[in-house]
Image (cartoon, rainbow, N blue to C red; front, side, top):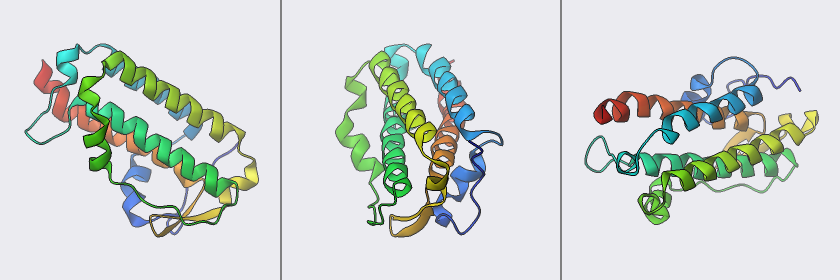
Amino acid sequence: MGLSRPQPGEYAEGYAPYLAAAPEGDPLALLQAQMGEVTDIFAGLSEAQGTHRYAPGKWSLKDLIQHLGDAERIFAYRCLRIGRGDATPLPGFDEDAYALTARADERTLAELLADFKATRAASLTLFHGLPEAAWNQPGISSGKAITARCLPYICLGHAAHHLAVIRERYLPGLR
C-alpha cells in the first residue's frame, strides 16, 4: 500500500500540527517503529517516575501513556467508520475528562504500556487491512471534514508530539 500524505483541505486545521509532526516515509512502518520508541521510554521508568508531573496540574507520565492509547483508539475507530463509507458524523471527545476518569496513576506502567502496545497493534491491523479505495473516503469528525487517510498520520503525529513533550519537559526532571 502506498499511503500518501494528506493534503490541506482533507482535515481540520486543528490537526495540522499532528500531520506536521508525522515524519516522512511509510506511515504504517513508522507507526510500528514508534511503538518501540514508546516502549523504550516507558519500560525504563519506575512506578514513582510514572506519576511524575513536570508542573502542578499537568498530566503524569502514566496519564500520558493512557492518553496515547485512548486517543489512538478513537482515531482508529474514526478511520474504520470513514474507511468503510459510513457518512455518520462522528463526535469529538474531551481528553481531560478521559484522563480524569481513567485514573491511570492507579495502574502499573507495565499494564499501561501493554495496553498501548495492544492498541497500536490493533490500529496497524486495521490500517493494513483497509482496501486502497477506503483511504480517500470522506467523513465528518468533530464537525469537520476529514478523509480516512489522514487518521494513520494523525496517530503518528499525535504520539510524536507527546513523545517530544515527554523528552523535553518530563524526562529532564527525572534525572
